[in-house]
Length: 332
Image 1 (cartoon, one colour):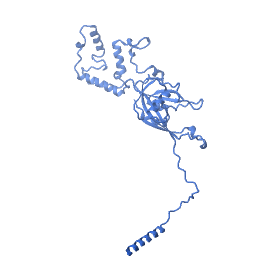
Image 2: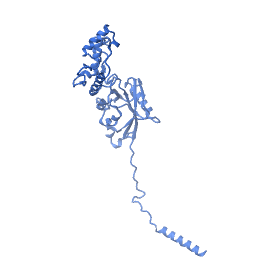
Image 3: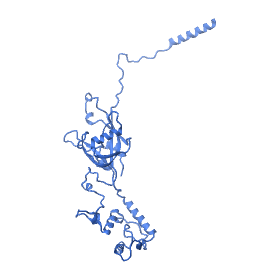
Image 4: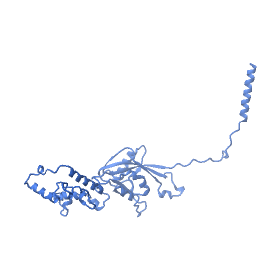
């Protein structure tokens, strides 16, 4: 047992010797009495909810010149391939309707269709079915005018307006709001998607801010989701006389804006704890079905509103704001 106890003692002596020879870690240059480095300040961001309210197109868009020429070419090609028009199936020989149709047919160059221009698919020149530059035969407005004029019923749609042209009665794609350039009216730009923009009152009296247009937005309150906040902001800023529908419960985009110029111009010792470094606005998508915006009694300090297309929105907002929202808007 003695050798075993001797070996244990030697191991214990070696362990204690190693402990005493271990170098202690270096001591910091800062003494305990000196203050340590303060943590970096975190940015103060306010989360807001915005609403992108849109009115969808009410009519089909204006066709491109290439589209109109192509559709007319297809109609003329179809006229060449189908069987000839059976006139006696639709009109009884010797009746006034038959004679009227024959007269109009001769005026069209002997063709039955009324939307092909002066083109006869059963002559030696029927191969020449393309539309030349400057030819208005393919214009939808021109075709409709000819149909109304041929029927002689345009006056039925004029109403009490004696100065209206019967050829264009009931066929206008431009409304009175378009003529007056009334950007607050929903009955304008019927073939385009319009978006609701609002403008807050100027901070300085007598100074207008034409580039301060933006979508309706406001702070998100405690325990409030983005959709609930957007619905509340829309009602408090643009009134409750709009029948709207929120497309989804998740945002379609966001925008980050730095602090206002007034806050940035303040001295450091005057910046309050409530001041923020930036604002992050999440936009919810909504559609309007009926009604109209009203900013008369709003609680957000708004002055006016407009319904604008995508190109018009770009002209009203700042370049930084446009960069953040342009991909949320449709082209048509």
